[in-house]
Length: 185
Image (cartoon, rainbow, N blue to C red):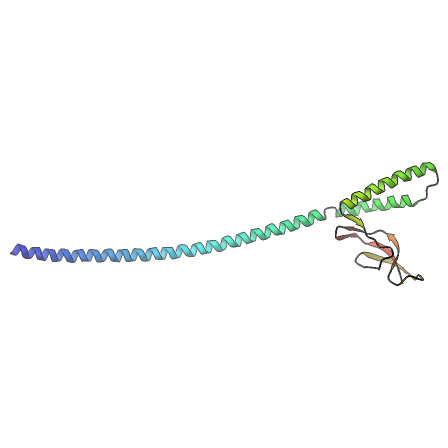
């Protein structure tokens, strides 16, 4: 009998030990689950921070790309501005030379050649977006014209361009050189 009692005691001890081990396992599992939940929260926070950083970097890159594209287009559009200003003096001199009356046949032949060069030069400039500002008999516009003189002329209303002293030119939608004009009073 004594051995049965020990056995029951032993069984009770074993049962208590098993319950303790099981409780410990449950506590360990609960603490592991809590640790995993904490780790998941930390990782979700890191993911959110990384997403925000990515979207900011992406937006900055897109803005920089757009700004550089606009600068490139603007630079490309007006790349001839310096050249255009320089060549206008040559065009003015060529037009002055053509305005001189040719008396001999030899000079007329030269003038005809210069006229062909003038036409070719004007066509090239037009092709590149440089065009003359039409000013004669137009209303004076300070955006396109620079008034040098004023003169009262009968039959012409005030504020009209009555003479172009130097032609003005546009480069696409930008003033390359304003026209120097005489305006009626």
